[in-house]
Image 1 (tube, rainbow, N blue to C red):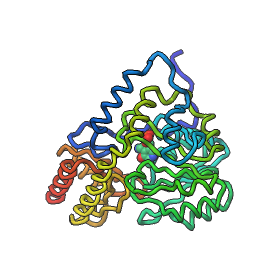
Image 2 (cartoon, rainbow, N blue to C red):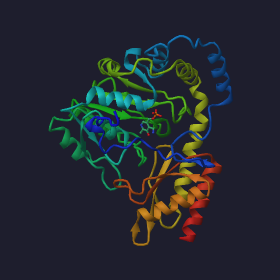
Image 3 (spheres, rainbow, N blue to C red):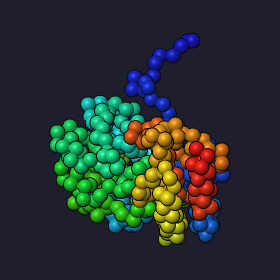
Image 4 (cartoon, protein in one colour):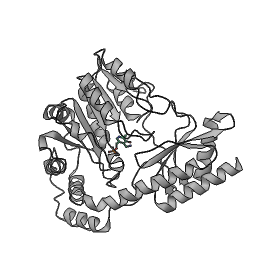
Length: 363
Ligand code: PMP
């Protein structure tokens, strides 16, 4: 054949996920940990991996790791599902609760992967946009779920890329107002110091998503998990890829979890730097940072005559030329003129602030 028939129609118009990850001295675009796992933990990882039989399939459901995660959260194994990064579990959610004839409630601007997964699975996407300051429009959300056709909702807390947590009261009122599955995406909750976990016992329609990629410095390993009632976990387990979490990742996850206290100083340092960077951005003329509970700060650049995508895109280029890679949201829905800078080491944050200061002087 010199031709191939078209791929599935739901792929039309979709583009592969591209975080525009480029080499740079200061990598502040992907909300990773700026430091690797502590050396003593790395040594335990090395020792544990040395004992691993690579010729054997891994435990398909990663039960050892599930048990450790369950114990760390006061739950049982049946209330935990481990995936190849949170991303796999988000796809599983769309497969299990979405599909043709079903609807997903999205709260943009938010993580773009949710809507992309919905489209891939033929799920209708219903958008309820956030308010001007990026708070969730609670009245509009409650009114929308009251119509009864929403099958699942994702509440991102802290919300990527805007930064703030969803109030627990709002999450609770939403859980009471609908029997839709409400996934609270807590990928960055360790930087916020809050979690919706206390709501789990009373709400069968709640699921929490967590990841080892951010606070636990394992973005390269690909490990995430869902906490939910047993009935929710067993549905998600039906669509999950067998063996998606390889044996190496399972071992690393267990060692890191056992040593989780060793990560707290790095988390505290990021929270302190977040305060310093936010204050420094706020002190710059023409820069408006948004309050963040996560490991980044979103900020808007005012051009002459208001925020412009052009000013922010020029700032992104300038920062990149100066060795600082941030994420450009300047042309995204409701994010005109916005850049997102991950909190890095103090030196990386200084490099960001100095380069942005020079850009503003020259503009
Ligand atoms: N949720 C949110 C809000 C994220 O920003 C990310 C990472 N970009 C994820 C989930 C998934 O992270 P991972 O697949 O690395 O666990």
